[in-house]
Image (cartoon, rainbow, N blue to C red; front, side):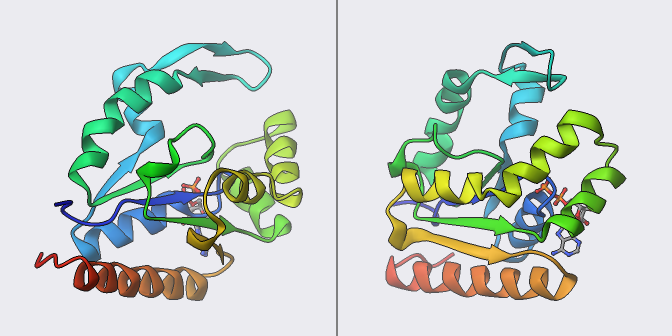
Length: 175
Ligand code: ADP
């Protein structure tokens, strides 16, 4: 039996995935798995993207590493992409979205500029990650959540915690 549900939190960089994942992990006891940190710590890279000035994720190595964790259950996986995970990995998928002017300020504050900044803003305006999630998973399990304000953050946390508790009741998990 799985220790808990496996949850994917996805969305454009800067929408609040890691903040939300960390908060849910603290409040629910589920384990937060940041795919970016996992890749960085284990050097799961396959070259370097000169244009975007960032390493290219080695998706196969990431998936190999995630396989056992997902089998255990109780994982909150956070990444700014979602089409390379097997559909069976997740019980539910949350796509965070942010108004583009707010997102612009967050990414600029993070030091993004030039192509990296405009590409991410365009990605958000064009709903790229939302569409990727809709194309990759059963739409019944994909939920789009606004993440513009601290109030949004709090209501998203509460909503996901309630969902986790319901999952545990329905799946006979006592933890
Ligand atoms: P991601 O993991 O998606 O790249 P982060 O969690 O690192 O995003 O958040 C980026 C920045 O935006 C952080 O400074 C964070 O505090 C802020 N932030 C995230 N979500 C919200 C929100 N709902 N309201 C206000 N600020 C937020």
